[in-house]
Structures are given as structure tokens and as C-alpha cells.
Length: 565
Image (tube, rainbow, N blue to C red; front, side, top):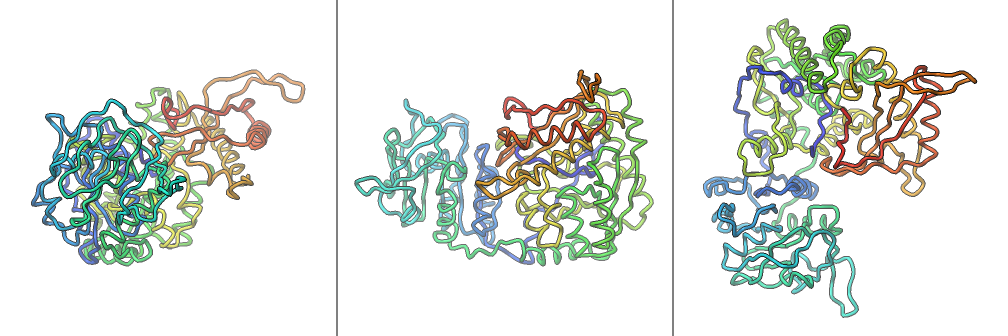
């Protein structure tokens, strides 16, 4: 799962309804939101790489708007792109010479804009423009050092070190079994390694560049500089994509779309729903009504924090429903994790529909759909691009709601949503919180969910998070909450023998979990200081009556997952 959704609003739970009828809605295209303020754009054609999203994030970081589309889009689609400044061809697990290999649309090379091919994109560019791509008997996977040639505009002045002979070298990440063995007409050598003599090529007259390595991953040290060079210098993008300016664009578009009608939003306090609520509220004020459902599985004092932030300080109209008894009653005796998810989902939707029915003037349902959801859903439907997961919150609503769909974050990545939240004035501590699963603590209590277990877990988890925030790493100057991507505590439905005050105890066990990751597709367990673990364990055992043993999870993903369940 490359993106962890931390809101548990309607957009999350619609997916958990078993056999529920969904009303399919054709969502507005992404460019709807850009019509009022047309941005220059980079088109990314996806050929199935698991890291294509990282290309888009690099482009956005360079200040240019971009969209990801399947690699076999029509020539007409490419020619219809307004404001197009460049095209990037992604990598793939496939071989360009396979019978069913996707071809780059001819219009990509005829659009009159610069083109950058990456891995498979380079091989496809070479093959389709008259070069040769073949399988290699010496594959490259992992770290490599690439020598630059020819002082091309893409790589000129970009290097990690120089050899004794004065050759510029790049520290990069390779992942390929095929390679280009003959350059297409008009191209010259741009980069090489000992096992891959053509690791980069360029036709600077036409603005065509290609590299065999992956500049989008963090392992390629100069990757950000390379994208900056391509986007800003070669494509000529002026850097008109930034979150502070985007606020006014988004507000104007929401007003145009909604008009005088009213909007209802399921507010969880998670990042996506919070930012969506703040943005829509700035656009339409009291015509927005938020429904906040406390299902009894929130973190410590979370309900109070949500109401204080949004209702008291920001003036949002919020319907606060304490449904903890209802949820916990339905969950009694249920141990299967998927069954628990479905129960929580079904109850949430039912409560939301009950409240929506009372708001007779509401015509829109707002969701915190973000761009990775859109990408992954499209990939799953087409079967051609990266099919990681399908998304319930892209184009589907319960049939009985009878509401139109408003998705103001639909074109943004998670990091952009966070920047937007800060620009809107939300507290940074809320905006940069770790991901929180939709069913809340329900997936962090193994086995049956009981109020007693949730209360114990809430207290233990709060202590762990507090200690992470209070412990500063001397080397980086950052606290360990900021140095981890996701951290939490898990309740285990087992008891162990302990000794407290010279007396025997027989109480519950919790496990602490903290991971570091850039994309949530893989994750390493965080090597927290022993002193932090010792202090946290001591506090939990001493302060949370009912827990006498604390463990720390040192499993990475894969083979484990980030959450337990």
C-alpha cells in the first residue's frame, strides 16, 4: 500500500460494505480544477512501474503540475493536452520486445515538446525511433555508478563525484534486465556503466533524453536535480505550481462547482478530511456541514481535539455523534479482522445516512480523495498500469445517499495535501500526524474488541507518542516522532505473569511499532534508542493499570505489514 489513508470518513467505509449497491458516478476530470487557472503541465505515461508516482512527486517538487495516464493513451489524447510542456515515459516490469508490450503513442514524439524516457521508457524510445533494445546477460539491480558523456543539457554540471580522469559520475539506482544496444539515428551517448554501455542517450535537437537508471527514487542522489533540470530548464516550466497560490484557485473552483447548494462531509480529524473541510469551509462557509462520528475507537482525547480545532477555533458547523455504544455492541464477540472492518464500515455508513437524511438541503457529498487514489483506481480498472489496489472513494457512492460528489483534493499528493493544510492555517501538529487507519484502534486490537481493551490501548499509545515527540535525536536535531513515518501501539489479547510491589500480576501485553518509509510500499522498523524504549516501557507499565509487559516489533515490510491486524 503506497499511500496510507488516515481518515475514517465515508470515503473509507463505503468499501467495507459487503454487497452494498454503489451508484457509479463519472467523476469530474482532474483538469476541471485547473480550468480557471490553467497551469503548465507535464504528462507522465505509465507503463506499469511500481514507482511511477515518485516521478510525479519529483515533477511537482520542481514546481510543475503533472498527471499520470496509462502508457497507451491515444494520439488524440496527447494532442488535446493544453499547456503541455513535456512528456515523461515511466519504467516497467515488462520487456519492450514482448509481443504484448505497450507502445509509446507516436504523438508523444510528434508533440514538439521534450521527452524523458526512464528505464523501460528509454528502451521503448530507442526501439520505436530506430535503435535496438535487447535482453542482457548482465543485469543491474541496485546501486550503480554512472559516467556522464557529452555534456548534454540534462546532465551538464550534475555529478556526485569526479574520477581521476575528470569524468563526472552519478550515484544511481538501477533495475533492469534489458538494455539499449544501438542508438537511434540522431541520438548520442549521454551516460554509461561498465555493464551497460548505453545507460543514457540524447537527441538534443528534438529535446529527447533517456536514462536507464531511476532518477525518481531517493537512492539516485542527484535525482531531484535531474528532474529540476528537465522540468525547468529543458521544458521551460516557470514553477507555477505551489500550495499557497493553489488555495485561491481551489476556493474559486469549489464556488463555481457548488454554487449556492449545501455540502455534507464526513470529518474524521485525519489529514485528508481535515484539509478538505478547511478548504471547503473557506469557499462556502456555513453551507458546509460536517458529520463527526465517534465510534469509540479514536485515540486519547481525539474527539475533544477535533471539536476544539474545527468547531471552536475555526467555526465549522459540526454534528458530533457519540456512537461508541452502538459500534462496540455490534463488534461484541467478533474476532476476524475483515469482519470487524465490515461491521465498522456498515455502522458508519448507516449513521452517516441517518444524519444526511436530516439535512434536506444538502446536495453534495465531500470526500478526501487524493491523487494516488485516482491513479491506483484507474490502474486497477485498466489492468495495464500499476494495479496496487482499487479505491472505493473514486467514483462510487451508496445508492441511497442521492448526493453529488465533491473532491477538492483529487489532484493532490499526500505531501501536497499537508502543505495545503498549513497554508489554510491548520495546526502543523494535526497536518503532519502519522497515518491512522480508517477503523481506528479497531485494527490495533487483535481479536475481539472490548471497551476495556480500547481504553488500555489509548493510554499506552498516548504515552508512546508523547515519548517519541519528547525525545530528540542529537545527530539530526529532530524528535523521533518526526523521524518515523508511522508509530503506534497494538493491544494483544493475551496475559502474562509479572511482578509488581512484590506481588504476582497477570495482565495484558502491548506491542509498540515504529517504521520508516518514503512510500509505504516497503518499510524498515525504526531503530529507536534503547533509552527511549526503556523509558516508554516503564511509563506504560507503571501508568496503565492492566498492562505488565511491553514488546517492540522489529519486523520490516515485507514480509510483515505496517499495521498488525
